Image 1 (cartoon, rainbow, N blue to C red):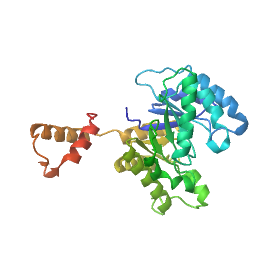
Image 2: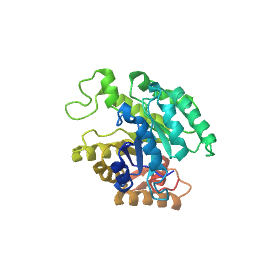
Image 3: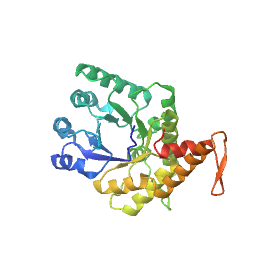
Image 4: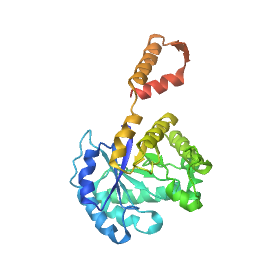
Length: 291
């Protein structure tokens, strides 16, 4: 699966923004039927999103297409799927996921609609937002206990969780996440890697703060996330650049792979005065797309 670096939210009720979305350079577009849409506008947004998905070009090199449906506890999610699955998006984002049982419930519903519309069952992926309530955040490790073949990644959000906690801050005086948010972020990262799915970091809320976004995106990649959510097209190139390997990183990875290829019977060797072993080789091969 191609690594998707930038995941851009696009409101599903805006013809103008939908039309511009494929040209933003985002690796994945998340058409939003949830928070960006007023309750009275949701049926129209659902119909417009389905119409757009039915006409947007799909070919190699174009953005992966996802739809954020409404949360299960709203009662609107099933109606969303009834309209959206027929258009065969690449995936569904499930907001306010209460845990793996709820993800399984939504997966079963998607399967029923896939079968109804003659689509291969399991074709459409799922990306749950796993942290938007305290109870949901505490279920993150339990994703490892369920068989969820439709799961393509895990991501988290700070805004809803902050409101649930009645927190007056999310970051400390030097800009670092405070303990609860750092805990959730780490759990999301660890669970995603344990499951072998994408780890997607949360958004940078101030879309005018390019320096802050750059620092956040670079930190996310350094910490092991594979991509990051975006709320404005201007954030996309910054995220894409942050998650792209540098020429120096590629050269170092190639040197590691070449060194082990030349010495296939050793477990550890030296490159530029540093000890390199099998975990470094696996990391280098992944960076070069060899695994």
